[in-house]
Image (cartoon, rainbow, N blue to C red; front, side, top):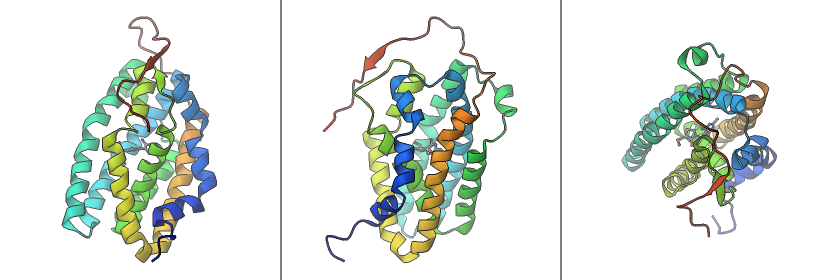
Length: 242
Ligand SMILES: Cc1ncc(C[n+]2csc(CCO)c2C)c(N)n1
């Protein structure tokens, strides 16, 4: 191996550069930064993403089982604990604010991209193949870090928008992406075709997932009438940009 050889995960990303860029530069991302994702689109997106989130935790469980070292297993177990903490409360607070109550959520079918993603994650779980599982985890986390890193210094005041950006670009999240990428860099070369297959299908589903948010807005959702709409933007307090 020479210094000039790209990392395994960089090579995968470059092989899917067009789809990757479609995710990072998606209309949803631009509107999220501007605070202008319509409530019906945001509600639909989050209802779908909560389903994704549930299976994602199972996928982390599968990674814990399939990992080939105790060190990796321990780190993955810690990640599972972090994921089960903060993010869950964000979803529930958003559902409340956006009027996406339990009956409305229950009657909302999976969007095609959600169905595709759940099937892909379940396929990775069933494979018990660490490289396949990592490929899906890496796409889900790294693609979100990639768009979140392009956020402007000034975020919308509305927590629904601002927290979704912040959740995907903090020191803890960056470290997690670095760990998952390093794991896939390590085990991927021995499982190249499996890793490439799962990586390619996952990034296409990420693009479709954003597209579906606009194709299937949750039209029955209403903002809770708990005061005036927040307006304007707020300076981000904790981000130091290089
Ligand atoms: C379709 C879709 N793909 C990726 C993510 C990102 N993501 C999912 S679970 C998780 C770990 C908790 O931070 C992260 C980063 C998402 N939310 N929705």
